[in-house]
Length: 359
Image (cartoon, rainbow, N blue to C red):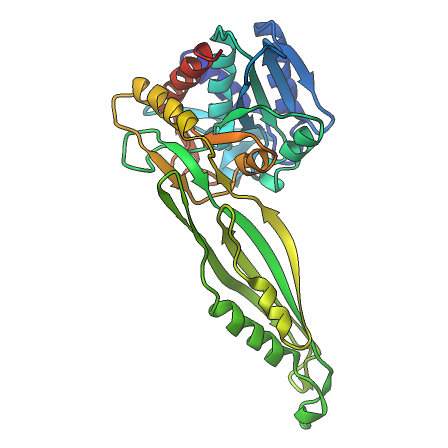
């Protein structure tokens, strides 16, 4: 393997599903040894580095994360992650999501010679709601522009890495219906919480899905009831019932879930709200697309992505974002997770070209 493959393999081999510290240590140590950048390690476990910090003009950041979801049993041996190379791909937990792209960002950051301010960031806690990104933003991390290196490969067609200009967010909610218990032989003596919950489900079923245009691309939201639980015994009118709702949000629009509270005894609680992302600068999106085209034989396009990423948190804080990275649909979080070494090189060349031209 070349340097990029070896660095990816090194990062993938470090367990980081329960504690990202060791992976963050490795990234920090590499940056300090291989670059003359201004390197910081935040309390949240983030690793940040800058070239030409505080230079005049606008700043550009390359952003990834070094935490992963729990591995499949087949991806662990003797307490360590298994890493294998075969057929031009590197296999292991986190190879696609997203230590391979982090490695590509690290090397491009090291090798580039920008005239303007360029940053690298690898966040902790992306897989648990973006805790690292939010901590970095709270601590003042505020690049003008960012390329978030999550997956964008094979979105428009096979064999290309596309530029994502928008992605959906996720809002997870609980609808709680309250009633009053009674013996089931006298149902009118109580208030059936399941019936109230079913009325709320009907409201959700009839909601319009939000849609929005971003740089000429249509982004579609969705809302779905994903669970219902209520009742304590077969002969008792239930006094409580909970309904879970998964909503995929779009930039600037939300489904009107608050309407469920028009039903007596029903309340609505938001449990998780991962923001969507919309690139607000078409010139920047075109600039990244031009670099992507120069770095590959295929014809990449500007596309949208169904999954939330840390780009949502950055965009919400005012950073103009796109997503561009090696992971392909269906690769992340799987028992046979892998990343193409050739696509990683493509990403490295795109990141390097962007950084070298930044001024």
